[in-house]
Image 1 (cartoon, rainbow, N blue to C red):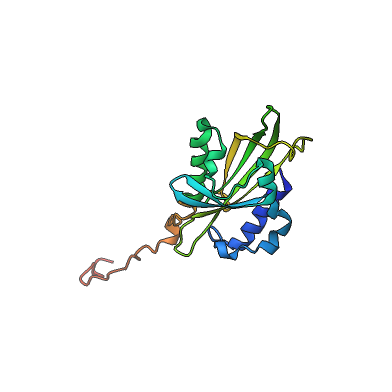
Image 2 (cartoon, helix red, strand yellow):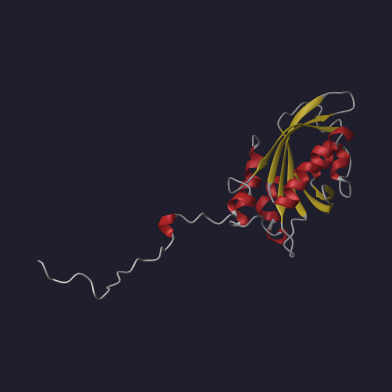
Length: 201
């Protein structure tokens, strides 16, 4: 993660989850992330890989020149890139991974600026990860940003984040029992009567 806002939000999310796969959405306190709220959004999962913007900060809406609430998140991306975005969203909502991406925003005259996208899972009461906490932060601050709207986003790079360091499919596997940890049956000595006599000694 390059942007300090992404780092701060990830660290807060990680502290609230407290070694669980993801924190509950009701555990996220807006006051604790108040400086970053203008750039934060929450997505609601509708089906596999499809998410709708439930809340969007004022700065994000300003970047796009419109209210984003109610929009499908994939509708902000070119058609040819929507499958990649859906794949990232599926990783977050199905595997409870995080995702960070380098993205580019383009305004109507073709000028571009670099941004960083962060996606983090939130758990609901039924144990599913049907909410996504995210942020979009500007890496560049060109003079036109805020004056001309970003009309299209483009994905340039992406990386899956596993807070524990590896996917749950690996971390959830019970440790292999080694020979030293297995209690082998002890051999017993059996005494048989009628063995060799003392004659001839």
